[in-house]
Image 1 (tube, helix red, strand yellow):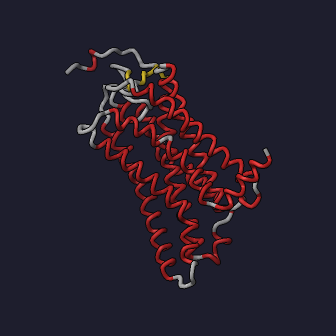
Image 2 (cartoon, helix red, strand yellow):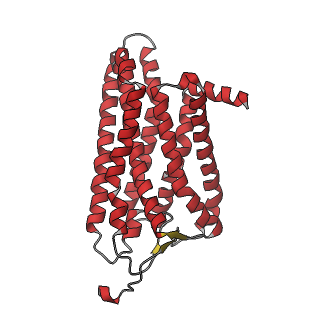
Amino acid sequence: MASPSNYSSAPVSEFLLICFPNYQSWQHWLSLPLSLLFLLAMGANATLLITIRLEASLHEPMYYLLSLLSLLDMVLCLTVIPKVLAIFLFNLRSINFSACFLQMFIMNCFLAMESCTFMVMAYDRYVAICHPLRYPSIITDQFVARAAMFVVARNGLFFLPVPILSARLRYCAENIIKNCICTNLSVSKLSCDDITFNQLYQFVAGWTLLGSDLILIVISYSFILKVVLRIKAEGAAAKALSTCSSHFILILFFSTVLLVLVITNLARKRILPDVPILLNILHHLIPPALNPIVYGVRTKEIKQGIQKLLRRL
């Protein structure tokens, strides 16, 4: 093994992103569908945000939380996909040292923010169904503002050390990242320092936050299901569940995609290394594209608001 003194001492000023180390031809036929999905995600979320902003009947806490989710989706898309498309279409593989760690922070932080937002939305549905008479006094505009500040502060503080720890490492060997994006694992493995604490911190922080969110979501829906099953009035149970269906579909999709991504990363030795890279890209693109569509199709008030918006154009 080479000693640290044998490495170049010149600091790394940029990294090179090699998207699919084994099948670089993938990027040519992926560029069109990814471009279309990116435009769909940005357009659908922008339409949803504008609709909620302009339609007075949608100025309610539930829709404000949905606006927060759309904003997070748009930031995640804009952080990851334009650079991926620049690599695919124009072969612009280099990324500035600082920009790489900024992307790493936003990806980790905003993914956890989405999970936390789903948890707050589950609590909103729990109060609406289990305590309907108290809903207007509990779920207020002030509650949404405090929840949004909690979402930002909790995840920002927990994930700020991730890029800081990675940036403090010595990068004294190659600067080629075998990924389309600056994930902590892909970047830190290029360092000639010990990265055990770096990886351990992200693992503990990620699973603590996402795991606690998931547990609270499951608890909320358990109480909701318990109350719904007690409803005797004909059609009332179906109506109560319909108010949760869109939210539940998004949580299920978010969790499923994340679980598949985790499993493929754990089974790297048994599958092509390019597969987790592709799934990571899709995880930052497909949920943002589907979230506003699911709510737009399944929520009558949003559908009517979009129709009014289109008639104004």
